[in-house]
Length: 92
Image (tube, rainbow, N blue to C red; front, side, top):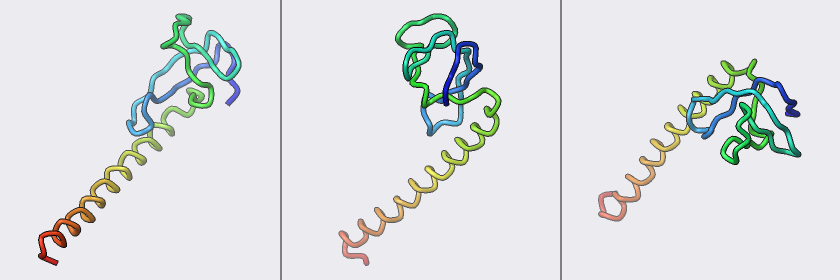
């Protein structure tokens, strides 16, 4: 997404957590943008990781689904480890 000064944006600090930060672009330089006029290093974002504020609700829904799927995957790996442990104990 090409961001411009004044754009309202949202971004996730972690793509595994369905919460977003909001801000307004106040500086753009190359592939980086800064939010809310502070221009400190911690306020710098890579432009590829920001989303237009208008899609916030949809992005939260996508991140929530991703979180649900990741939890299901982790739970399924538990089944693999349980089988491995049963084999090691000679129970299977």
